[in-house]
Length: 625
Image (cartoon, rainbow, N blue to C red; front, side):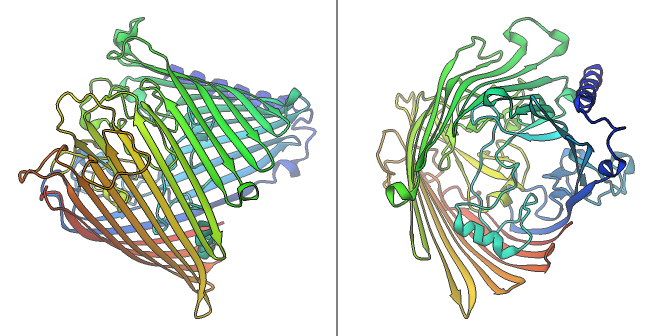
């Protein structure tokens, strides 16, 4: 409590100092200026009904039939009746104003209300509760002759330094799903943006790391220099409320940067440390969980191409990894525009050591099970490890080196893109492979939230909006390093049908995992795993205010005889299907009604207990103001 009081006091002093530094005082500033408060935000209600006609026999969903209200299950038979889910906001408010001539303030509110109550035991819950969701943020900026300074404080601050220090993985999503962070008010513009780009139009917060504490940034400083500082707690390092578990987990990230013409260079530092048991504090590694990163970043921007590189070193320390070892980190990517090569082209290479572990970065942890600050917890509660993971295009993973190339080509209204990737482990840390179920992945992740070792064979793991599976290999004492290959292909077409705009999209992703390096993906049974995913979608603007949406998805995953085998002596042979129909109604320029109906099924020919089927009906009303 004392620490939190001191932190809040320091933030208040800093903010007041910013205002006092301004040459215009409150007395000199007119009341009219100070009362120019702008209000914006949205009101969103999202209700989903799920019906699983075939459920997992053991370790299945919380409830086969359930209403999901703003991302939360009111009827949860596990967790002592506590409501669980993604807790998507009902109301967002942003207040903006100018207390002085050169000072701006922003206040963000996110309010959460699942309209839930426990009538049987009302003392265990708040009836029809409404509360601040995730964050109540305050931010302000001050423009002086020395530079522009921005400070933010509050619940969850989205902040980005570099991929290796403070950032986040950006997963590819299908366009059938609705997302609470979307700000597009005209439906077909959302799908047009998807046609023009590779993914959905995201909120600016997406891809950033999260801090519960404060951030301070300086720009427009002498010699074109600047700085960034972030301090607090992170949701990826034991939870924003880790102090409730006697876990003093703190994160510090800092950057010094400079602009040189159109180029950018920076020095970056990240430090995360938890005292595992405050009552037994010792000045050694027996009671500490720590992650550190030191990097230098260079962004070179030329007329027809750009290069982004970051290099440095990282380490992890905990009671198991008690010797602090610094491993190298290098990530370099070059982008060439179509004016230079007649088509856009990019190439990326990275090399990341096994001990480079940072859970608040864009580096997936595939090598270390001991990073969870609540040291000693059972593996089923640990969702920070993705052993020998199969990654998406452009994703970084530790204990790995990788090279990937991607290119695109437009032929009239047809847009093609193709990417190839080849990677290999640096060490064989685990005799297993983790892969993501991309089809119906968000739906699967809601069967059981934030758990490892679930499902009938204890192979599933869920994290936020993602579903993973872990397949063991049955080689004894393997001496090889696993290799990973990827093919990523998409084709999109924009045309007219009966005088109305129509967008068609087909996306294919194929991965193979084997015990040798291959220039392209392996298509035969020499591969431990072969993973195929295809997604076809259409978006038909039948009326200026009405858009029809359709989805057909297919997933096929196969394992060879060197993977874990079923009773019939065969590996996994999984098939998944997903079908969806939806309609978007633009009620006004700032309000919309969105309906979705999704049917899905999954089965394994050999591991016969691994199957489910069902449907979900989703209704969303969203109003912007």
